[in-house]
Amino acid sequence: MQYQYFWLKVPDLEPDRGGMMEMDASWGDMASHFMVYFRVEDCDASAAKVAELGGEVCVPPTEIPPGKFSVVNDSLGSTFSIMSLRPME
Image (cartoon, rainbow, N blue to C red):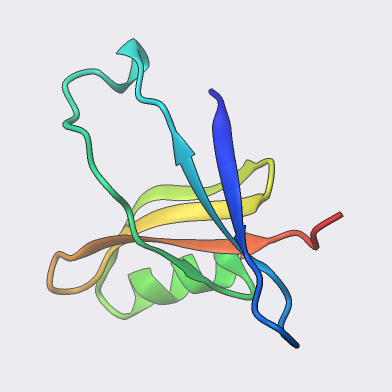
């Protein structure tokens, strides 16, 4: 799977990232979409907290090139992702 990343540089702050990936046949019937990602310090602990508070972990914490991410639903059914990032090189 190919990712394209973009960096947002704000003076006096560590650059943050955004990304895009192309959907291919492996995505099946899933419609094209955008996903909101919230940056967290510890993806594993944050996913566990979502489950503890009545949410659902849809995709368990998974390693990808920039760090680790998880897709979750909150207790009201809203879907979003959480991600902990490795330091930029």
